[in-house]
Structures are given as structure tokens and as C-alpha cells.
Image 1 (spheres, helix red, strand yellow):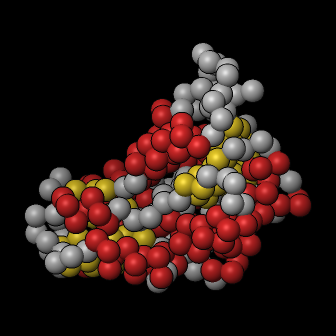
Image 2 (cartoon, rainbow, N blue to C red; image 1 turned 120 degrees about the vertical axis):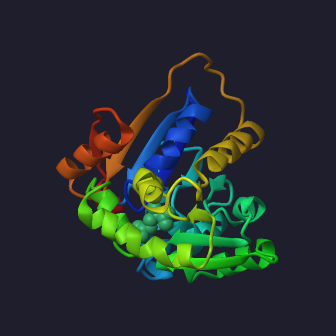
Length: 267
Ligand code: DGL
């Protein structure tokens, strides 16, 4: 048996994390679920997101997942605690905006956070600021519409540029020199964000750190995996339209992939 890791997001954003997981665990089977039938999570209630997290977790466990990455800041804020309570034997690795490294990196003492409204309004995010902001001013910006762009595979249209300009302008005006990409969809827009804000702004996301944390927990908490030297694979599922999911996942993953429907019982 090879190592099996489950990964889920509201949609295709978590693919930005999956790339790092692939590098960190080259021999693992990675099962990814895009909950594109319910995207975006950003404006949904915590109860709704928790219910989706429970369903997606049950599906991933039914497929043999031994650890689960919640590759979504919004779902982590709403559902990580209840998921850990419900499935107490399973390691869950969540994501949260990279406040700590951004506070360490800023020279201007102003950090901008681009994230979903759900993440920014969560108690978890408030606790993160309380713990790490110190004397640094944190300017937040909810970004409705950015997730939808990435879900459509639109990474650089005029409309995309206008939205990015609108959301980054207040952060630049406030003097932020470091921007946190606090949603896993946003790294796919990083080249466009970079064009809009210029080279002098640092863009920080947490994909690499999450993959490192996953590897650490797999190595320390799961029983050793006997099969060595196998090449890992990826299996993709979506609760949304499969033709569209196949097109967009292939575009963002950078290879032609097959996407299977998430079984009805979990959709
Ligand atoms: N990728 C999710 C995140 O990191 C997007 C949330 C959404 O669907 O609005 O927050």
C-alpha cells in the first residue's frame, strides 16, 4: 500500500497547495476533491462549510486517506476544529493566512491581507492577529469575485486586472510592502497581482509551509509505509460540472488529467 493523502478545497484553489505536497511526498497517492458544486465558500455560513467539510472528509476516508489537508483558508477557519473533534485519530493540516512570516518580513510595518470575507471575519483570524501582529498594522481586504475568476480559469483578462487593481489599491495606499495571499486560489493570480503592484511588494502564501507540516506529521504520526520507490499519483474529484472541472484542473495543474464526479452521497 502506498501512502494516501486526502486534500480538499471549495474548488480548484487547493491545487496551488497540491503542487507543494507533490514535491514533499513524491511517493504518495494524492486524492484531491474540488467542491466546485458549492464554490465559493467565502460568503457561506460556518455551519454550511462545516457540513461540507464533514462530507468531503468522509469521502476521502472512504478512499483510504490517512491524513487530510484542508487546502482552504476559509474552510480551515470554519471547520478545522469540528473536524478534528469528529475524526480525532486523523491528522488534519489546515491553512491560515501567513501573518507571522509577513510580520517578520515587512519593512514598512504595514502588512496587507487579501482573503475571503469568511476568513477575515472568523474568530480564528482575529486570534492570529492577536498573537502575531505586534506593532505591525494589518490592513485587510475581502476580495469577492477573485475565486470565481480562478474557477473559470481566467487569470489575466481585463476584468481580472480591474478586480485586482481595486483590491490592491487600498493596501498600497496604506503603505503595505508585504501582501498575504490568504486564499489558496490567489497564488494562481500572483503573476497578475505582481504586474499590478510592482516588484517591490512581497507576496506571501502558505502552500510550501503546509506541505512541510504535512510531511512532518506524516513522518511522526502515521505508521511507516513499507512500499518504497513507487511513483505517486493524483486522483481528482469534483462536485461541480465535470467537463468544466476537467478543463480547469488540467489548465491549473499543467497536465491533462481525468476528473471524476464526487459520488452523489457526498455532494
Ligand atoms: N480557496 C479558498 C480559501 O483558501 C477559497 C474560498 C472560497 O471558496 O471562497 O479560502
